[in-house]
Image 1 (cartoon, rainbow, N blue to C red):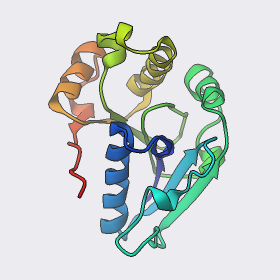
Image 2: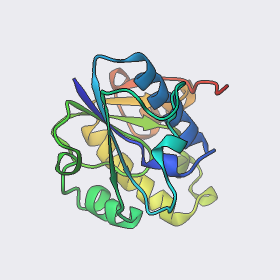
Image 3: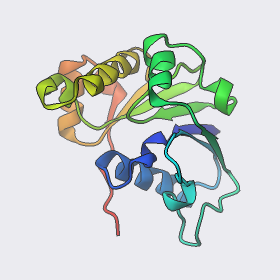
Image 4: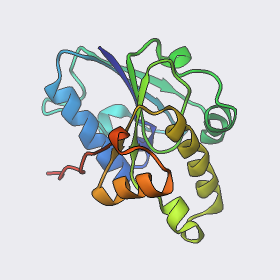
Amino acid sequence: MKIGIDISQLAYPNTGVANYLKNLVEYLIANDKKNEYVLFFSSMRGGFQMSNFIPTESGPISNKNVIIKKFKFPPTLLDLLWNRLHIFPIEWFIGNVDVFITSDWTEPPSSARKATVLYDLIVYKYPEETDKKIVDVQKRKLKWVKKESHMVFCISESSRKDAQELLKIDADRLSVIYPGVGI
């Protein structure tokens, strides 16, 4: 199976989103030698190198089943194309995949089965506590998650409960995967 993962949020190191995503991808790469992985990221940040964020025990990624696709698109352009207009499938950028996992910022269209990581729903619960631009982007993304994601990985029982109550996502599409502990 070929699994695509949007790892763009790794450009923001030492955040909860980046740490969760980093641990998830590191675990998959270290333990799954059967499936192929296409790690996609778009970052305008200078000096952003994958080897700084997804090292393995023996240094940078050495799993021959991992391909990294890097692009330099501004986040506002991806929000426009994927969250607002919902055009240009991810396959145009990374090739065909069987599963595509999104993270925290954009929700590209895809013919693959889709999953996403849901960290929290603060944009619905406490919108006044968050920058209006972030609230708007997250709400656009979550609209597509609700419509298209086959599975939503929640980082806690609380985020799972919020997804059911606030987004009305069926329980059978929600799965809790707790954050790991970094060493």
